[in-house]
Structure formats: C-alpha cells, structure tokens
Amino acid sequence: MTPTRRPMWLPASNYYALTMAVVIAFFFLVWGILHDGGDETPWISAGIGASVILFGAVVLRELIMRRARNRYVRAQRSFDRELREVYSKLGNERDAEKLTLGQNEAILSDIAKKSSAARTLGKFSAAHREVFELCDDYLARNKRELAVIGTGSPRLVPLRKSRERVAEFHRYHMLQWAEIEAKELTQEAKSRAKLSEKVESAQAAMNVIDSALGFYPTERSLLESREVVVELIASIKVAHWVERAERAAFKGDYKEARSHYRDALFYLGRDNISSEDREIAANRINAEIERLRQLEQD
Image 1 (cartoon, one colour):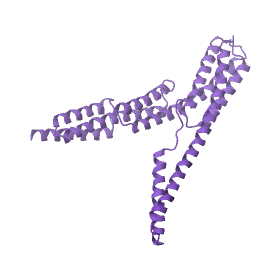
Image 2 (cartoon, rainbow, N blue to C red; image 1 turned 180 degrees about the vertical axis):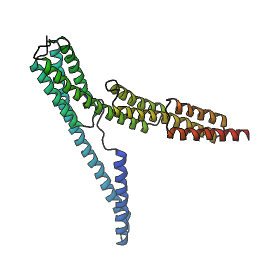
Image 3 (cartoon, rainbow, N blue to C red; image 1 turned 60 degrees about the vertical axis):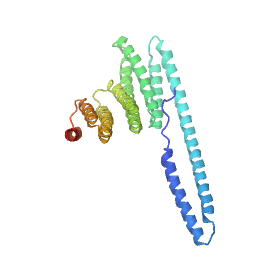
C-alpha cells in the first residue's frame, strides 16, 4: 500500500526567489568591480557570471530534490513491503480456529515494528494511517477471541494485555494521522484561489477530525482542532461575501452590497458560536450596512 500524499518538498518559489536575489546581487557586484577597473563591457562578464550561478542553482536543486525523492521512495517501499506481510499474516490467521499465544506475539511484534517505521517517517500521515488500520484489524479479532474464550483459559490474560497495548498504538497513530492530515488540508484550503476549492479542502480536514473523534470523542486536541477548522470555514465564507459586497459598493450598487453583507452575517452566526472576534466582525459588517443605507437614501 502506498500513501496518497507525496512528501512536502522545499517550495520552489522560495528557493528561486532567494536564488534570483543572489544572482542580481552578484551581477551588480561584478559589474561595479569591472566598471571601476575600466572594462568597456562590464555587463557582459557580469551577465555571464550571473547566468552560471543561476544554472548551477537550478542543477543543484534538481540533484537535491532527486536524492530526497529517492530516499523517500526507498523508505516507503520498505514500509509497504513489511506492512503487506502483516496484512497477509492477519488475513491468513483470520481463518484459523483460534488465535494462539504464539500467533498473538508475532502479530504484536509486527505491529510494534510498523509503529517504529511510521514514527521514523514521522510527518507522513499515510504511514500513521496504515498502522492504526492494522491495529483496527487486530482489535476486532482480539474482541472476537475474548468473546468466546473461557475464564480459565491461559490465553485470557495475555490477550487482554495485548489489547491494551495495541489500543495505545491505535490511539497514538490515529491522533498523529489526524493532526498531520488536518494541518495539510487547512494549509491547502488557505492557499486555494476559488471559494469552492477552499471550502472543499477545509471540509476534508473536518472529515478527518470527525473520523478520529468517532474513536476518541473526548480528546482535547481533536476538539480544539475542530474548532479551528469551523472558524476557518466560517472565515472563508464570510470573507467571500464581504469581498463581493465591497465590489458592489465600489460600483455604486448599494442594494446588492447590503445583500452580500447580510449573507456574510448569516455565515458568521450559522454555527451558533459566540466569540469576541465574531462579535467584532459582525459589528463592522452591521456598521457598513448602515453606512450604505444612508448613502442609498442620500
């Protein structure tokens, strides 16, 4: 299984902005030195030197990026190979009459190994997702075993302890997955240009958090993250309607502008959330509506 998201490479825009600054500085430095030295065409030599630096920067970035991609691909392939082995073991053992202590220990060992691999990959949400899904499978099987096991069975205590241990793995990796995935999606929402794309990405972040809350409904970090996403969605919609209202007001269409401001107020109060920031925003919008009404009457 491969992750659905690629690693977060160094943004090209930042790299090339810095490169161009260095190239421009180099050009004028060389040009000034050659000009003071009496060179008749200092811009030619300076331009050639700057071009060499720019070309070298492009090649250097490509080499670094290619090496980083190769490292990531190798690590991910190794992770996927080991994970398939565990899924295969779980699949084969589901058909067994019972989960023996030896099989149980082998599965726990494999889960611990995959957990370690996911922690090494760290910021890649897909790695954490794969581990907590693997834990889901084990916990389901463990539950079936405990439902039919006898009270005097030597498997009872080990299986209960194993369940507690895997439950800890499950909680850790699900929370890691939710945090990383939600952050990526909220950042994606902020960088989108269209309203529909912004809302889609923000709603996807909400779905991730709600999925984790289905398992851990009282987890404080998830509840706080959900509040942040709710505020983000509201701010996206409010900003959209405020922008449309300002455009209409600029064109002199005060009636349409007031209508758009009322739409902004609707989304501002839609979630029944009261906060100081929302109250300040609502007061500003109401003041603008009143100002436009006065202008329309005049």
